[in-house]
Image 1 (cartoon, rainbow, N blue to C red):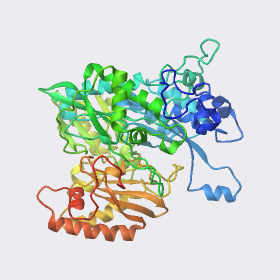
Image 2 (image 1 turned 90 degrees about the vertical axis):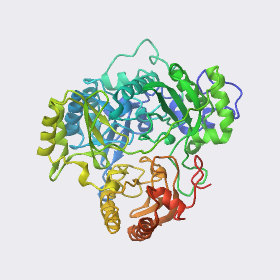
Image 3 (image 1 turned 135 degrees about the vertical axis):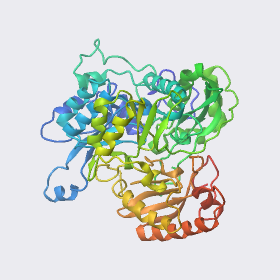
Image 4 (image 1 turned 30 degrees about the horizontal axis):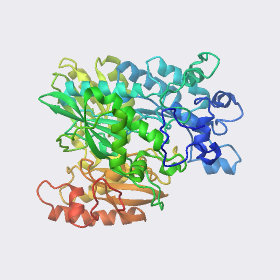
Length: 580
């Protein structure tokens, strides 16, 4: 019997009827999990460990949870023959990054009670609670439920949190596209009743394992599948990094439909040339009414043809490269029952956020607050967490998390604006005009001490490195120049580094690969120029490139474009592998 969905076609390029033990072990785990139940409940009840034993930690990712430990004290606990200091990260499902004040207040409450007095805004427009103890997982999940939030499908081999552009100036269009993004998220959430049973204590339906998975089947997707909606001219979601991207086409102030882009992905593994970042390919245009069936067709192709033998090659980008773009497009169209229309013209100019106050076409005000690396906490002289709680207590609009880890206090009336400004001043939440262009366009993943994959620092180190690069820019009067810089603690690419103008990915403690030449609005991959080097070599190299940029750039030329033109990074073919 096939492991795959009953919708899977039979003309495979591989044998999907082979025994479970010949597929990737994760496929066996999913197939035998009783639709994501496993023995998670037993693991939560195990009192002699802070962890959830066995392979259930993999199933818990489908529930939005990662088991982690404090790596700052891991060696010391090992010397003392103690169990690692296990805790959990909970990621919220928040399509489009839109959050109500009541939801913000509940998240603030849960963060203070269970998450170490901090919230993390992610690069996919949602929240993460870190350092949650095992015994506090159910209370945290039930607290989220009180404000209609959950963590379902925030991780795992499914459709991850759906992204959506945040452009306050285009309020009406944003609202329409956001509604479609949310509908898409709700449409592709797993249907298993395991979540309600484990976290809410609800009774199982019927005599089996509850509702079945009409789309995902027993083994769900081969790997995670990322979807995003973008509204030009801003490419804030980095649409070319998505497995499936929808580019809104607006004519005469009305949403006409979407250009469809497929096959983006940032992850790679060092010293493994079969893995690579890839930009999505534009394959056509659809009218709005065909949106959900297009989602199903594209995801269905990856569900049925994605690699379930080699997990390192299981993302959609590899399926496209293995089968060929024309073949994949043909299969999508066959499932749709019609041909995609030719892609329509559009243009991107940036992937950054508007800073400070902007006024939307609906007359409301929106304030973008710079949140360095997405970390919401109380810092010396900047009581960010307290200030945002105070705003949420009186705010009648919404909060919007941007794909760049910033926060927009949105839908503010003219009358309410002075009160919000007063709270911001009281808590030291100053204007972004005192922050350099480099820092405003910086982004880092969490990395150490909680991420088990991190090989080097990221969130804790990037602010200090940016300060040192700022000094190089100031020497040439470039402190206000917008330059994208992104850092990750490993090559997996959670902060989308491979499309930044400057990027660093961790290789070992204090050692990074340095990349240059990404496109300013996310349209081109960058190129590795230094491998496995420390801070001194990074700053020395950047000092020379910045000096050349200051002396020889053309009018309006971006840093990444100059790096390519001047030979500081070898030219990269758009839409292809970084190592072509």
